Length: 372
Image 1: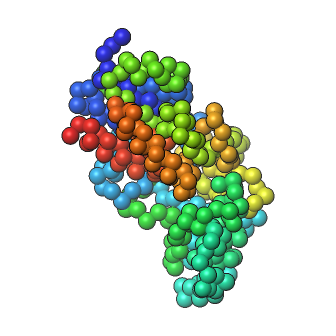
Image 2: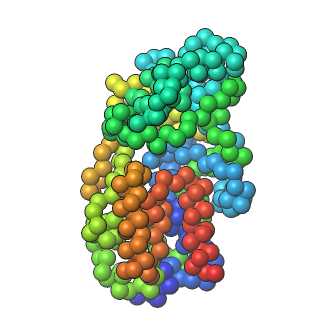
Image 3: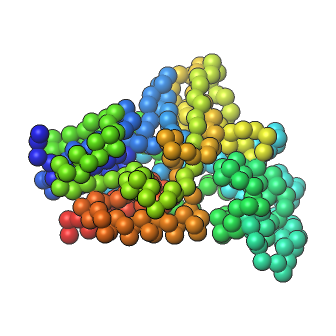
């Protein structure tokens, strides 16, 4: 067997960034990935000339110029602006909540009229401390927008009633008194021309990096721990420790992707379905991420269904409530005491809801700590 300096478990953005930086420093790295492809949840593949986001919509956005410059080494980005639309029982509303939303909802025309309407509706919670997500949302934005654009979507997303979810999940809601549908306030935003997979391919292209897909770390965990001097682990931290302190909670997702024999199915890359009756949370039409590139007579759509997570399912994001965060803290302490040769990273390894720029930032921080 070749002698490696690092074993990286997971060929997603965190693992690939660490491997790339380690190889730049002359280290030999083995990367193993459970799926049959690299790039983790940012994986894109081409169908009908359209870059399909296999695991949901991914829009890169950041205000950190260092991170923006870093990712631009690996791909050229287009000027895509995230402007989702909400469909509530056939009525369409612009997101985030802005003057277009308020005009469609209430017929108001000026920022003052919108502000007056929001303040009037917030009076329902006057003098009360919000005890759950529903009350928190009403205290921030009022009942109309809560009922039509927050309640159904949130309950599908979390698999719980809004009255049973903690208030802190939505500490604030973006409210703009301008006619601006740009979802993010970040300085930099876009999607790589030609998809995300190329970024990870370029990161892992070094002669010092060997990659194997379709390999389950847990099938030979003890052997890997014995054979490799240092490990970067981007899977679930509780699974690494055989759930010995208890099970952390995750949410899973199910995707249904299909080709449609039309050039334009819904007119927008992302449409959220905010009513309770529609089982999916959103439909993604991938060609709009790259301004309708691809087959002019075909399009690819994906319906996204949130799901409860059970062992064996794919975990997509952590459930960062108080109970889980306290349990994660105990696992992080256990990692320090029992696994000091293991670097835990990414959404699952660090049990945090990271955007892509935050994953890159966390990976580069781990690199700095490792090679300081």
